Each structure stands twice: as C-alpha cells, then as structure tokens.
Length: 328
View 1 (cartoon, helix red, strand yellow):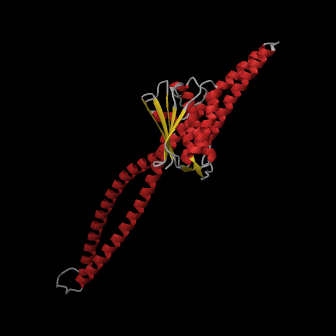
View 2 (spheres, one colour; view 1 turned 60 degrees about the horizontal axis):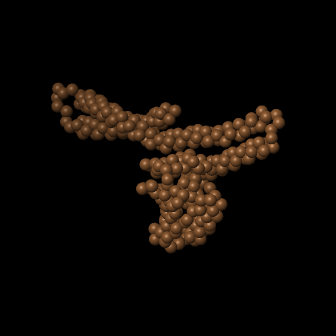
View 3 (cartoon, rainbow, N blue to C red; view 1 turned 60 degrees about the vertical axis):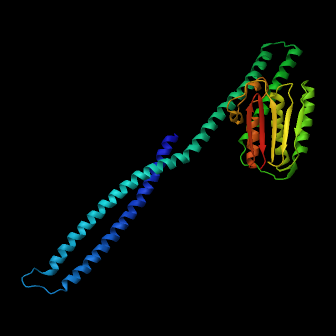
C-alpha cells in the first residue's frame, strides 16, 4: 500500500516538475527565437543599405534566404539543447521526487505499523482476562447447584479479572490521548517524591515485602502539573518496587544543577541488551513477567514527559536499572 503511494507521489511530483520545465523551455525558445530574428533583420537592413553591384542578384532575396537558414540553424540547435536539458531534469526529478516521497511516507508507514502492532497487542492482552471470566462463568453455569463458597470464589476471580481489564483500558486510553492540556506550575520535587514514597512504603509493608528508599542530593523545582508529575513518579517507583530485588534498596538521586531525577534499583532477572525497548508498549522484562501488569507504564511516563518537552531514559548495567528524568 505504502509503496504504491510513494510511486503515485513520485509520479505527481515528476509531472509537476516537467510541466514547469516545459513551460520555461517554451518561453525560453520563443524569446530566444524572437531575439535572433530581430538581430538578423537589423543585420539585413544594414547590408541592404550598401550599394548594389551590377549583375548581382537582388540583395533582399539573398538576405531573406540567409536569415531563414540562420534562424532554422539556431532554432534546431536551441531545440536540441532544450530537449537534452529537459531529459536531464526528468531524470533528476524522478530521483528527487522518489526520495522526497519516500521521506514523507516513511514516518507514516512506521506510525501505521506501530498502530497495527498496538491494536494486535491490545487485542491479545484483552483476550486473556476475557477468557478467564468466560471460564469462571461457564463453571458456575454448568454446576446446577453451586456451593456458596465456590460461587464467591468465582465472583472474586471475575472481579480480579475485571480490575485487570480496567487497568489495561486506562493505560490504553492514556496512550491514545494526543496533545492533552499541559499545566505549568512550580512544584518542589522532593516534597512530591517524598509523598509518593510514603504511599508506596505503606503498600510494601502491607504486602510483607517492605522497601527501603535511599535519597541523595538537594531538591529543586520543576514546572509541571502536579497530577502529571505524580503519575510519572508513581509509575517509576511502582516499577522499582515490583521488579526490584527484594533485599535491595531503591536509590533516588536529585541533581539540581543538571535538573535531573534518577531512580535506581537492582533486578533479579535478565535485563534486555537494548533497554530503550522497555519504553515500548506491552514490553516487559524477564523479572517482570511474574508480576501483574501489561508493560504500559514506562510508555505512559514517556508520553506525559514528552508533552512537557522533558525526557526519560534508562540504563542497565551489572544487574542495576537506572531511570533518569531530564527536566531541562
């Protein structure tokens, strides 16, 4: 589909180039021929004024014949040059038009392929909880006299799957939004981070796997909507808590001079060689497959930060993952 579109765009641009080239060539030909004709006429007029020798043919006839020959020679020579020039322009316009069309369509093709992949991945991820709900429902319906305990367990299981679907749909909606309204307000980064750490600290205590957070550096202010900053911090800290090694601390480093915030943690599983792929939708590392989630968090965090012209990057070395937000 995209190849044919590239060829169509190429053809349209080539036709446009050649139309302009032919128009200019006709204008050049007519102007040049007219100029030469005037010049030859002036020369003929000057020659005709010279005295005529006895026995010579009429000077006007000779002059007209010479002028016609000169004009024909000039026009044929000019025509050949214009044909040669237009042939070169045709070849060059084909190359330039094709490269331009390809450059225009490449991002569109990549975006289309990502959209198709995204739809495919989303369908696959949604199918899993739906299948689980269907199985639980079928089991209840097949049992004509289900026990109350079994019915409750099935309802709880269905409820859990519904929650998973809600989380997935919320994540998909967050990624599908384009150009959401950004609100710039000065926020103390340390206070916001500390509030998030308190929340996750309480959650980790309830799960029986308490996490220790180690902070370093001085705070600084960032210009961003508080709800958006909270969402980004929640995603990053949640990832560190879920997928980090249980006995290792989570380090949070403030760099006010560079306007950066880094969150580091050790991981127990394998880390992909190209960590940048972890920011792709539905991408999950080896250590994260045992945990709940769909691999949308980092994609959402990057999308939010992109709207503010901020950036996020990640590195993985010696079993440690470091995510860095650049607020400059």
